[in-house]
Length: 298
Image 1: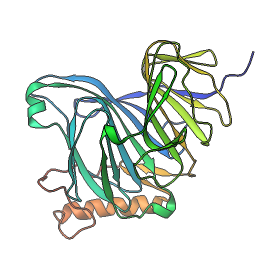
Image 2: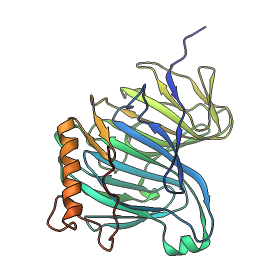
Image 3: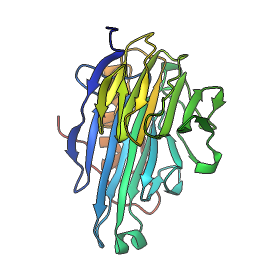
């Protein structure tokens, strides 16, 4: 009987973000990162009744890139660089925090009036030390700009990085891949074999990995150098992700860094910026925003 290629299975911990529930997969106590991915939240699926929506007030980030990808619904991103962008299913919002940025995510008024179904993934990619203090940036990539990769019974959209000879237009700083997979029942799902660390997260349906069943909402991290056989047990939507390991990273609230000192500096900067009304300070608010999330108490 061959040994399974699964290193660890991670089931999400449910978190309520002010009326909107997410499934937090990474970081996990026994597996902090997969390649450069240090944070992975499944948002929803959730049905918002008319009059309700998402209101994530402005908050800061350092040392990472946020990657927002939706399957259903839409929301608006605003950041302190002045970018104001609606994201819709299949698009990618990539925000490079670098030395520091603040942003908000909200539901537009027309969507709030009518209600909507929301489902997607919010992930954070840690930056290598050489890029950790890069100038912040924001990039929006519409669905049509992302490469499609097709194998029998499987369609994959490349969100980030390189896989199967295709290259995403999204900016990256270290070897990485991130794929949205739509597989028919009994289809074999290929996994890139040229990346150090790899995982699959099942959004809907189920897969068999070397005969072991992995159901909806579970991430299977693949053992190093394994050659797994992954098959869709039914019609399945999944994310494939991974890349080169970056080494130890510290994560506190919305900050990621290679040292605790840099985390402490970010805390002081957000406190000082809020005390100064975000004028001539390390962090500023997105134009038109007045609210913000205070620094949590340790």
